[in-house]
Image (tube, rainbow, N blue to C red; front, side, top):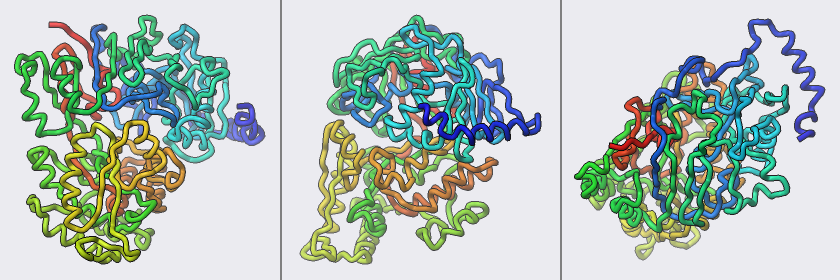
Length: 606
């Protein structure tokens, strides 16, 4: 790290001298929290997060069901398939996020945060009591090593921040300062959310090649107690957890045991839940929620059905098309695929028409695009790029709607015209391109996804009417992860969760670097400079008005490029759970999201 810390020492000294000449009123003071805009909602002396119960009892257990398997316990590298819950349950960061606010952080491993006048640097002061599960203290050396390791050999999601760090160095035995090399107000918050690892655990080991044998040592309230390779992982609450009295932790991590169990497919998982082998299940199918959750334990009250609302963006869930190769490198083909997808009929068939459709990436929130022509600041942001964008980015875009019948005649006619415009023609019942070959592609699905398979069965029948040869391939978790990480697919199911505070992570989804670099979230291969400009505007916004305008402009660009065939949205979460599992009546604005289940639930008998 010495080269990183001191390579630009002369510039850093000059920078510090400049800061020393700033007016006294601009000097920063250590604070208990930080917000993206304005001040954090909770005061210095807050007792607990507003959606946590500080008096919640400790004890009990919860068992989750997952489809597939796993072959790694390290969620911080590209290699392997990992239980997704480990990122939030098995590791801690310097600051913790409150999901009762759009984007605010409060002290966790760090007792305070301090920033420069324009957040050009951030400094964290570690709590003296912070310890790893083996009893050793969390040190500044651990913090610095974690940032370097994650930023250089960790998962690609960590590398964006590392490239924006000019220096990182200890300013006292318990404080670390990070200086950034660009004007980006969100970086101070992102830095506070990096997981902190124990450096000594990885001495002499290849972090990027860790296996199931490498049980993490972390500062989390939970330790990994049992591992049945590919089948289950059990976490147990550490009775000696260092942070039980930290305000951010009061009323959280209440359950003694958390178990993730893996099943071959969703049908088997559902039967396991009905039989009492699992203590909770999220249900994403509205029809199934209404008609199939009437089994005996529901009728007796042993299992409770909870619907939990939220105010976060829908994000995007659906079938993504890979524009890196034909046929989806042509927007007209992508548009034809969207028209051929008879959502209204599929929705009626599979959910009884109960499930509303996603209408844009940020729909269901204040950040989502508004219908019709762009106006005001949104129009001003898009105007310089009007010759580079699809016209609908400015004029407005809405998904096609069918009459609900199986034939979908109007939209099929539109799809046929789009394909004709793209150079295809029907010959002997086949859609033939200029190369003389039939239009064909593969839909890659993960094993066990029965609902996606049912959707595809209906969709492929429609494509056959157009003379298109579409085939479904299913793979196990390991193959699916490898293929999607390397963009080795034509079309696949993809779910992108978006928050009320989009920021630097948007580059991972839509940035041009993800076109070639493996392991990014830009599965569609998007390369639209105007979109990256809108991300810059989001990051540079100094007011809520400018922030909302830039996000709505980005939403318009994304929808107009037609990368996804959108599926259902979930404006609330349907969670079935045993009656002993409780949660507070005060809900976070993010609803059933990270930091909620199981973090603030508790077990209560009777």
